[in-house]
Image (cartoon, rainbow, N blue to C red):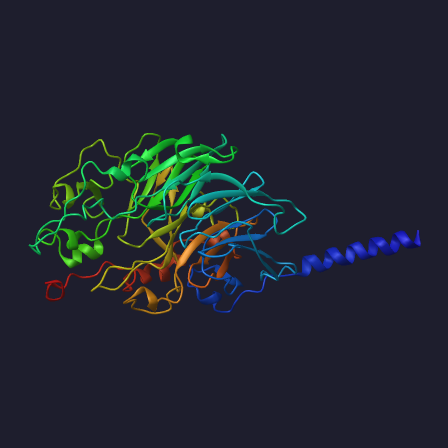
Length: 461
């Protein structure tokens, strides 16, 4: 009886200690600027240049590194003392790293799925080990050589299907074999665009079959230039993605488009994707000011001609060149109700809006109702760039990249330059949250890296 009493006392002490552990928030929210009522802490100051991340139901974090040599292209992190900071950090991944567009890290039905540029792998997770044991299983191989926009991002539905992005590798399927003596001439596109035979598309595969090749799947949709953020919405039972719009409207058609047009057009696209949808790349682009899909200049467009109705439109036109690189529908219960089932988007930030400031470098949020956006894009998290005017991408301290929801409903955010990881938490009364909590974030929309720039004709001529 005495031994039993000691044992029960020890168990009580251990559980009491566990309850006493509290998250240690950074007084400056780790540099992030958030709506009133939200707090943030830095989980890790930098695991290395990275892309997406995933959080397991026990709180373990897995990050995909953007490395193109050696092995061990993944990182696993664990918090052992409950303060929110990662105490254990381990590199792993017994496979060859083949490129800096290695992107995906997702958990699905007990498996950790991750991708290099050319191969999709998976490993079985278990509750005892932070790092999965054994050699990764190959699920899919890309037969093409290394190319631009080579991220293999993944989504999983509820019927064992895996959706894989195979983006186009050019800007607008331009015909680079032709020279143009006239500097005002319009660059022409290949018609038909041969990339669309297999690329510029999202393909569907059985997630449980190993060693698949590209043509083992079904082309689910086409006409998407470059998708890095893709997810399945379980509530709506639909596939969603965020697409990088094309660049160089002015460069390719200077008699129709100014340098200002080049900076603010066309839209990046938030898409709900049904099987068989064609989103019109490279023959079209989406103008979010006109809310219309227009014919691309390489294919006879002049900024005014509307595209055929056979092409699907996005559900929301996002700001040009902000580079949406991850998409997450929030299903947790920690955040105020207005965030429930809405979409968080990680904007990696623009690189080619000169002579105007670069833009993006934020986490955005779009509220949803009845399966569609019910409000305008909001700025949920800012402060990543750490400079007011971003002239060049190198000026930004961090570039938001990955999003993941923790088991408690907190939001994890990663960035690509150093691999810094934040955890965002709401710890005040959800019922008191309202428009007043968003005032400071609304004001940020007037900052140079967020607002639409004024057209200066003396600059663009």
